[in-house]
Image (cartoon, rainbow, N blue to C red; front, side, top):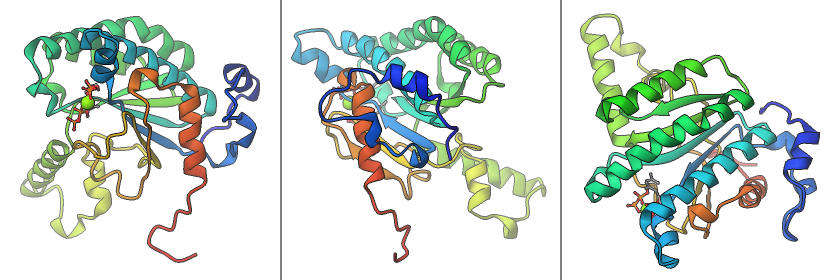
Length: 261
Ligand code: IPE
Ligand code: IPE
Ligand code: MG
């Protein structure tokens, strides 16, 4: 279960609700421990407004900040967000460079938020493939926030689920070869412990924005029994209210996990 939220702060943050959402309709005792988000649609949001795609990525940062704060207010234990996939290197070089600069700039600017809200940052993905200075900034930020326990933000950067599983496989085989791991003892927990998400609970709710119905190589192992919520909103339009709608939807599901109720 998630930590119980500070009700006064939660009500203040969620004041002035639109007609279709009300905090009172939420079951605070049955919130997902881990919410995962595929933040999609920045480019389309910008193009629809006659703007450069870069403006969409910049606006997407505001949505992420709002979603982090909303999740903290709700007492969510872990929020994971897909920021850059192993496939996104295929984009034009200027867009890739822009995104890398945006990550550096945003990290520097948002550190006070992590300290203020006691959010632990964990980067999931292959950090070796990132520009050296960005990697160093991420490592420093992870060290500085390592002791915070209000919420973990697992930011997926240079993340690909197949890459993650391949890395895990390699690490497991090395341990077997070094005789520190008995192949007979390998089980699901062994594999989970070798993923970038080691130590985090599996997501209970996955949100993808922009209406797309695919995983795009995100958390293939971890999403095995996750509930999906597809939002029609482009990521820059996502806000605290749409997060509530996703959680309402989650709370209305009958989760059977293969059994019978
Ligand atoms: C998501 O928005 C952000 C990243 C993948 C970095 P997109 O850039 O994919 O936006 P669309 O899907 O082209 O609209
Ligand atoms: C998925 O979005 C990756 C991120 C949100 C970082 P994409 O826009 O890259 O996915 P596709 O290309 O539509 O599958
Ligand atoms: Mg996209």
